[in-house]
Image (cartoon, rainbow, N blue to C red; front, side, top):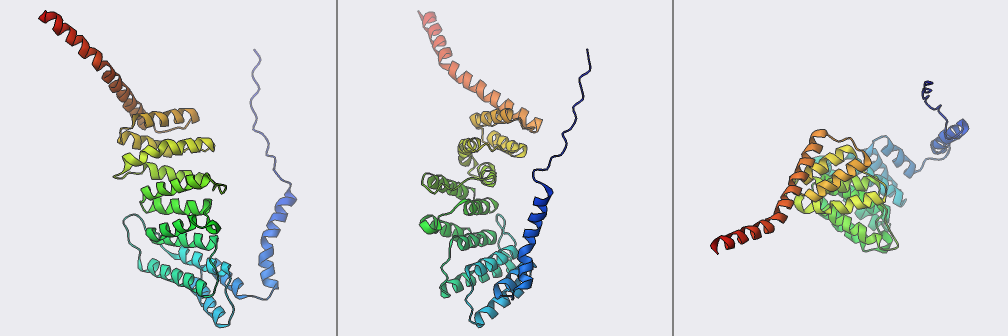
Length: 314
């Protein structure tokens, strides 16, 4: 028989002609060129200081701006809050904020207070920056209170950025139950006309909140079918590492049905998980199904023994 022709890799075909990429690179440089041509403003100076990682100089320029009688814009406050947040060291589970992080949070709160004194009404973006600052500094109760305020105000309703900030804060600080409460709020808002979207980051953080070790793991793992159903609806599937952690959590809590559901997902999607974990999961599922079958047979066995005792006594 004639030999089958060898498959050749397809040649690279650019999605756009080269002039589109050149134009895009030029447009990216336009704002920098405008800054060179135009008179520098306090806002642009603060922006360039923050881009260069010079937070102290940016804050000094901000104070000089106020002394000169210029009212800072929303963007200036948001840039400065973000700069303080970047300078913080994230507070992990069971940790306390270090000296720098505590001071940066105090600066953020002064900026927030100054914003109200300057009659700059905080908008959605300002609230989102403050949630990120609270989350990185480990101020979880304050962030949750601020988030509840946003959910109750039509002008500040959270969307995917705020939700992802909350999910990230709760998971990295070990407040997994709080992350699932945010998930419930997310689902409630999706019933309205607002409908905040889910992103792959949302699902990744929700899986972590469901399957991370903890005293309430058995309770949290019950939310796994909801999360997997949503992911399937959005055609987003967990990676192999996430599937292995889900299987380990199901095995640890003896949730046979959930383990079988995760194994079915792995086989359907074709994820290459650790063979040892997969074998342990199949063994656990088999033992669980065997136990269930034995429990179903027990009434029939008892009835048979009762009949034998009756016949022997008669």
